Image 1: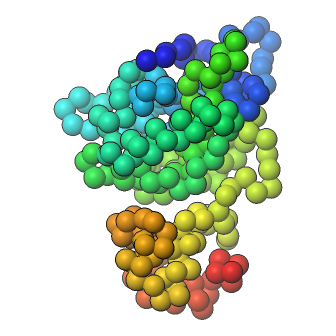
Image 2 (image 1 turned 30 degrees about the vertical axis):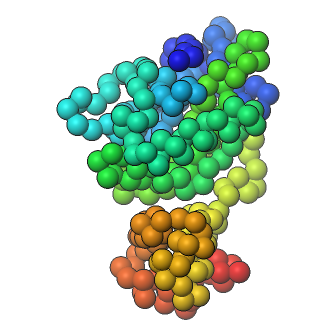
Amino acid sequence: MMNFDTDPDLIVQPYLNGVKLVKPKNESGLYPNIGSLFNMPFMVYFVGFDASYIAANHFIRLTNFGTQGGYYSHDDLNGVSFSTIFKKETVQMLAYENNNILHTKKLTIYDNKITQRLDEFSFSSLTFKFPVFDAKDNIIGVFGISALTDRSVFKEAESLSSSIERIIQTGLITQQKNILPGFHIDNIYFSKQEIKCLRLLIAGKTIKLIGQQLSLSPRTIEYYLDNIKQKLKVKTKSELIEKVVQHIWPEMLI
Protein backbone atom coordinates (compact mmCIF):
# COMPACT_ATOMS: atom_id res chain seq x y z
CA MET A 1 0.00 0.00 0.00
CA MET A 2 1.31 3.44 -0.93
CA ASN A 3 0.66 5.71 2.04
CA PHE A 4 1.15 9.44 2.50
CA ASP A 5 0.83 12.02 5.24
CA THR A 6 -2.71 13.29 5.90
CA ASP A 7 -2.00 15.44 8.93
CA PRO A 8 -5.02 17.74 9.55
CA ASP A 9 -2.78 20.84 9.31
CA LEU A 10 -1.61 20.11 5.78
CA ILE A 11 -2.97 22.47 3.12
CA VAL A 12 -4.86 20.97 0.17
CA GLN A 13 -3.95 23.19 -2.75
CA PRO A 14 -4.69 22.90 -6.47
CA TYR A 15 -1.76 21.52 -8.46
CA LEU A 16 -1.73 20.61 -12.15
CA ASN A 17 -5.16 18.98 -12.65
CA GLY A 18 -5.37 17.71 -9.08
CA VAL A 19 -4.11 18.67 -5.64
CA LYS A 20 -0.93 18.65 -3.60
CA LEU A 21 -0.65 18.46 0.21
CA VAL A 22 1.71 21.13 1.54
CA LYS A 23 2.84 22.34 4.95
CA PRO A 24 1.15 25.55 6.12
CA LYS A 25 3.04 28.82 6.06
CA ASN A 26 2.78 31.62 8.60
CA GLU A 27 0.54 33.76 6.43
CA SER A 28 -3.10 32.77 6.03
CA GLY A 29 -3.50 30.66 2.93
CA LEU A 30 -6.06 30.73 0.15
CA TYR A 31 -6.84 27.04 0.42
CA PRO A 32 -8.25 24.82 3.19
CA ASN A 33 -6.32 22.38 5.33
CA ILE A 34 -7.32 18.74 5.71
CA GLY A 35 -8.80 19.33 9.15
CA SER A 36 -11.19 22.04 7.98
CA LEU A 37 -12.28 19.91 5.02
CA PHE A 38 -12.96 16.98 7.33
CA ASN A 39 -15.29 19.20 9.37
CA MET A 40 -17.45 20.08 6.38
CA PRO A 41 -20.92 18.49 5.98
CA PHE A 42 -20.08 16.08 3.17
CA MET A 43 -17.84 13.08 2.60
CA VAL A 44 -14.12 13.85 2.36
CA TYR A 45 -11.52 11.11 1.99
CA PHE A 46 -8.11 10.05 0.75
CA VAL A 47 -7.69 6.60 -0.79
CA GLY A 48 -4.91 4.54 -2.31
CA PHE A 49 -4.83 2.54 -5.52
CA ASP A 50 -5.06 -0.74 -3.62
CA ALA A 51 -8.81 -0.15 -2.95
CA SER A 52 -8.33 0.96 0.63
CA TYR A 53 -8.71 4.14 2.67
CA ILE A 54 -5.89 6.31 3.95
CA ALA A 55 -8.00 8.82 5.90
CA ALA A 56 -11.58 10.09 5.90
CA ASN A 57 -14.02 12.28 7.78
CA HIS A 58 -16.94 11.19 9.95
CA PHE A 59 -19.41 10.79 7.07
CA ILE A 60 -17.28 7.94 5.75
CA ARG A 61 -16.92 6.51 9.24
CA LEU A 62 -20.71 6.46 9.54
CA THR A 63 -20.79 3.95 6.70
CA ASN A 64 -19.23 1.39 9.02
CA PHE A 65 -21.39 -1.19 10.74
CA GLY A 66 -21.17 -4.43 12.70
CA THR A 67 -19.19 -5.09 15.86
CA GLN A 68 -16.25 -2.78 15.22
CA GLY A 69 -18.19 0.16 16.63
CA GLY A 70 -17.24 2.69 14.01
CA TYR A 71 -14.23 4.86 13.29
CA TYR A 72 -13.54 7.79 15.56
CA SER A 73 -10.50 9.69 14.33
CA HIS A 74 -9.63 10.94 10.87
CA ASP A 75 -7.00 8.23 10.28
CA ASP A 76 -8.83 5.25 11.83
CA LEU A 77 -9.62 4.01 8.34
CA ASN A 78 -5.94 3.83 7.38
CA GLY A 79 -5.49 0.58 5.48
CA VAL A 80 -9.15 -0.48 5.70
CA SER A 81 -10.17 -2.19 2.47
CA PHE A 82 -13.28 -1.14 0.57
CA SER A 83 -14.31 -4.82 0.55
CA THR A 84 -14.82 -4.84 4.33
CA ILE A 85 -17.49 -2.13 4.04
CA PHE A 86 -19.03 -2.20 0.58
CA LYS A 87 -20.61 -4.71 -1.79
CA LYS A 88 -18.60 -6.22 -4.61
CA GLU A 89 -20.23 -3.99 -7.27
CA THR A 90 -19.37 -0.86 -5.28
CA VAL A 91 -15.79 -2.02 -4.65
CA GLN A 92 -15.37 -2.58 -8.39
CA MET A 93 -16.88 0.83 -9.16
CA LEU A 94 -14.59 2.62 -6.70
CA ALA A 95 -11.51 0.78 -7.97
CA TYR A 96 -12.41 1.65 -11.57
CA GLU A 97 -12.87 5.33 -10.72
CA ASN A 98 -9.60 5.53 -8.84
CA ASN A 99 -7.64 3.80 -11.59
CA ASN A 100 -9.25 6.18 -14.08
CA ILE A 101 -7.87 9.08 -12.04
CA LEU A 102 -4.43 7.48 -12.16
CA HIS A 103 -4.49 7.33 -15.94
CA THR A 104 -6.28 10.59 -16.81
CA LYS A 105 -4.38 12.59 -14.14
CA LYS A 106 -7.21 15.08 -13.71
CA LEU A 107 -10.26 15.95 -11.63
CA THR A 108 -13.25 13.83 -12.60
CA ILE A 109 -16.89 14.29 -11.57
CA TYR A 110 -19.07 11.22 -10.98
CA ASP A 111 -22.77 11.99 -11.03
CA ASN A 112 -25.29 10.24 -8.75
CA LYS A 113 -23.01 7.41 -7.73
CA ILE A 114 -24.92 4.66 -5.93
CA THR A 115 -22.86 3.22 -3.10
CA GLN A 116 -24.02 -0.03 -1.50
CA ARG A 117 -22.84 -1.31 1.86
CA LEU A 118 -22.67 -4.96 2.80
CA ASP A 119 -25.67 -4.50 5.11
CA GLU A 120 -27.88 -3.44 2.13
CA PHE A 121 -27.76 0.27 3.08
CA SER A 122 -27.40 2.43 -0.06
CA PHE A 123 -26.88 6.12 -0.76
CA SER A 124 -26.21 8.33 -3.78
CA SER A 125 -23.78 11.19 -4.19
CA LEU A 126 -22.22 13.65 -6.59
CA THR A 127 -18.48 13.04 -6.32
CA PHE A 128 -15.40 15.08 -7.21
CA LYS A 129 -12.20 13.04 -7.36
CA PHE A 130 -8.73 14.60 -7.65
CA PRO A 131 -5.34 12.96 -8.19
CA VAL A 132 -2.95 13.67 -5.30
CA PHE A 133 0.55 14.63 -6.50
CA ASP A 134 3.77 14.35 -4.50
CA ALA A 135 6.83 16.62 -4.68
CA LYS A 136 8.09 14.76 -7.77
CA ASP A 137 4.74 15.08 -9.59
CA ASN A 138 3.91 11.42 -9.11
CA ILE A 139 0.29 10.50 -8.38
CA ILE A 140 0.21 8.87 -4.96
CA GLY A 141 -3.51 8.58 -4.32
CA VAL A 142 -6.97 10.05 -4.77
CA PHE A 143 -8.66 12.87 -2.86
CA GLY A 144 -12.45 12.74 -2.97
CA ILE A 145 -15.35 14.98 -1.99
CA SER A 146 -18.84 13.48 -2.19
CA ALA A 147 -21.93 15.65 -1.75
CA LEU A 148 -24.97 13.57 -0.86
CA THR A 149 -27.85 13.81 -3.33
CA ASP A 150 -30.39 12.40 -0.86
CA ARG A 151 -30.48 14.14 2.54
CA SER A 152 -32.77 11.47 4.00
CA VAL A 153 -29.69 9.27 4.36
CA PHE A 154 -27.65 11.58 6.59
CA LYS A 155 -29.82 14.24 8.25
CA GLU A 156 -26.81 16.41 9.08
CA ALA A 157 -25.86 16.78 5.43
CA GLU A 158 -26.61 20.02 3.63
CA SER A 159 -28.63 20.32 0.44
CA LEU A 160 -26.73 19.43 -2.71
CA SER A 161 -26.69 23.02 -3.95
CA SER A 162 -25.32 24.25 -0.59
CA SER A 163 -22.66 21.53 -0.60
CA ILE A 164 -21.59 22.43 -4.14
CA GLU A 165 -21.35 26.09 -3.16
CA ARG A 166 -19.13 25.19 -0.18
CA ILE A 167 -16.93 23.01 -2.36
CA ILE A 168 -16.48 25.81 -4.89
CA GLN A 169 -15.65 28.24 -2.07
CA THR A 170 -12.68 26.07 -1.08
CA GLY A 171 -10.98 27.24 -4.28
CA LEU A 172 -10.20 23.66 -5.28
CA ILE A 173 -12.64 23.74 -8.19
CA THR A 174 -12.89 26.56 -10.71
CA GLN A 175 -16.46 27.83 -10.65
CA GLN A 176 -18.26 27.01 -13.85
CA LYS A 177 -21.77 27.79 -14.98
CA ASN A 178 -22.57 24.14 -15.60
CA ILE A 179 -20.47 22.44 -12.95
CA LEU A 180 -23.29 19.99 -12.19
CA PRO A 181 -23.54 17.34 -14.90
CA GLY A 182 -27.30 16.88 -14.41
CA PHE A 183 -30.31 19.20 -14.24
CA HIS A 184 -30.89 21.73 -11.48
CA ILE A 185 -34.50 22.86 -11.79
CA ASP A 186 -36.56 24.79 -9.21
CA ASN A 187 -33.92 24.05 -6.55
CA ILE A 188 -34.19 20.30 -7.18
CA TYR A 189 -31.24 18.42 -8.64
CA PHE A 190 -31.79 15.52 -11.06
CA SER A 191 -28.83 13.51 -12.26
CA LYS A 192 -28.43 12.59 -15.91
CA GLN A 193 -29.13 8.97 -15.05
CA GLU A 194 -32.33 9.89 -13.21
CA ILE A 195 -33.52 11.91 -16.22
CA LYS A 196 -32.78 8.98 -18.55
CA CYS A 197 -34.85 6.67 -16.35
CA LEU A 198 -37.67 9.19 -16.16
CA ARG A 199 -37.79 9.75 -19.91
CA LEU A 200 -37.98 6.02 -20.58
CA LEU A 201 -40.63 5.52 -17.90
CA ILE A 202 -42.82 8.22 -19.43
CA ALA A 203 -42.25 6.61 -22.84
CA GLY A 204 -43.98 3.51 -21.46
CA LYS A 205 -40.95 1.31 -20.81
CA THR A 206 -41.04 -1.21 -17.97
CA ILE A 207 -38.40 -1.31 -15.26
CA LYS A 208 -36.85 -4.36 -16.93
CA LEU A 209 -36.68 -2.66 -20.34
CA ILE A 210 -35.26 0.54 -18.85
CA GLY A 211 -32.56 -1.53 -17.17
CA GLN A 212 -31.73 -3.32 -20.41
CA GLN A 213 -31.50 -0.06 -22.35
CA LEU A 214 -29.28 1.61 -19.74
CA SER A 215 -27.31 -1.59 -18.96
CA LEU A 216 -28.37 -1.41 -15.31
CA SER A 217 -30.11 -3.86 -13.01
CA PRO A 218 -33.87 -3.45 -12.35
CA ARG A 219 -33.00 -2.83 -8.69
CA THR A 220 -30.79 0.12 -9.65
CA ILE A 221 -33.56 1.54 -11.87
CA GLU A 222 -35.99 1.27 -8.96
CA TYR A 223 -33.48 3.09 -6.77
CA TYR A 224 -33.24 5.98 -9.24
CA LEU A 225 -37.01 6.22 -9.58
CA ASP A 226 -37.48 6.11 -5.80
CA ASN A 227 -35.04 9.04 -5.55
CA ILE A 228 -37.09 11.00 -8.07
CA LYS A 229 -40.35 10.24 -6.25
CA GLN A 230 -38.88 11.49 -2.99
CA LYS A 231 -37.68 14.69 -4.63
CA LEU A 232 -41.07 15.37 -6.23
CA LYS A 233 -42.99 14.20 -3.14
CA VAL A 234 -45.07 11.54 -4.85
CA LYS A 235 -45.58 7.92 -3.83
CA THR A 236 -46.34 5.97 -6.99
CA LYS A 237 -45.00 5.78 -10.54
CA SER A 238 -48.36 6.92 -11.94
CA GLU A 239 -48.31 10.00 -9.68
CA LEU A 240 -44.74 10.64 -10.79
CA ILE A 241 -45.62 10.48 -14.49
CA GLU A 242 -48.67 12.70 -13.99
CA LYS A 243 -46.73 15.34 -12.09
CA VAL A 244 -43.92 15.47 -14.63
CA VAL A 245 -46.19 15.51 -17.70
CA GLN A 246 -48.73 18.00 -16.36
CA HIS A 247 -46.80 20.25 -14.02
CA ILE A 248 -43.05 19.95 -14.45
CA TRP A 249 -40.57 21.35 -16.83
CA PRO A 250 -40.48 20.31 -20.48
CA GLU A 251 -36.67 20.69 -20.52
CA MET A 252 -36.45 17.53 -18.43
CA LEU A 253 -37.94 15.47 -21.22
CA ILE A 254 -36.24 16.94 -24.28
